[in-house]
Image 1 (cartoon, rainbow, N blue to C red):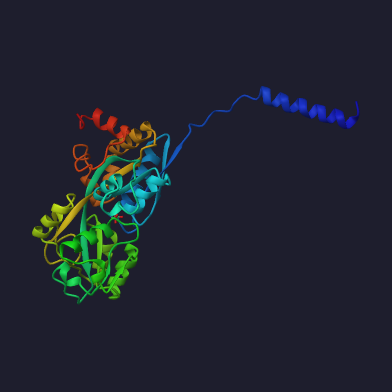
Image 2: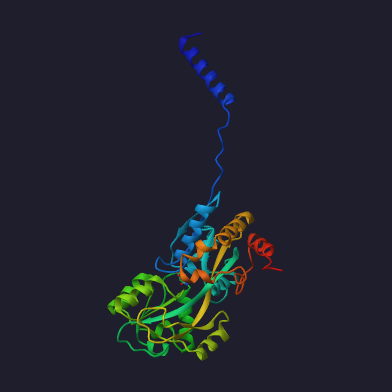
Length: 326
Ligand code: GLU
């Protein structure tokens, strides 16, 4: 045998020996990475999703979560449809419209694979006005420059529906701006817009900062009689108040409307994974509560109140075992 041939044969023999005698090393437990679509960096979905990610990191052996910021509810529903994310936080009204392809989802079609995980806290319509605008009612926004909600937000739906109750559409505004939430708050501070709508948990960090910087904040109220009209057409709303101690410099409670923030998941995600996420959150509920004041609204007993879409089977199993679902 020629020398070069011998070398080749030896190499093959060695390779086969390694392949056939190598023992598998210790197998690391496979970690499953999930993504959670949150919302605005200055919002409430973001710290709450961060808390879930921390809980999984510290307490779950096999689950890890990445949190993504977004325009929020509508964008998140569409990200579930396309499979770009596994879990998402979004408004319960938007989840319903997405699942059924109705109302403001007529144009983009159904999100047939969106499933419920849990409802978390009330999200209140905050209509902030710039200093000196002195609007007493949404009707006074006619001809004004208004941030109607970020692109892909649920807020934009709420703005449209609320303005409709006052006989207004976006065409009646001098300008309907689709700014990011943090930009809208900056524009309000500088008086570059007259008002901005934000459907978010009371105690939203961006609004809190604006109130501190301006030493006060002015909201436009939506009185209960108008919330009743709204509810008649769009049943997800309820009347509420933004309490006067919520933000710096408020003089009194402000009447407004509320929907709910919930968590949803792609139907294709394994049952066990959804079940494990819920178990981790409820077993470490104090870690969740410490993320934001709004997180404290989550309890086992109330987690299914206001759920507008079918539950994911993993969530169904969890809530049945806890006796919440009969
Ligand atoms: N509810 C908001 C929206 O979908 C997002 C709020 C948040 O990120 O806290 O428009």
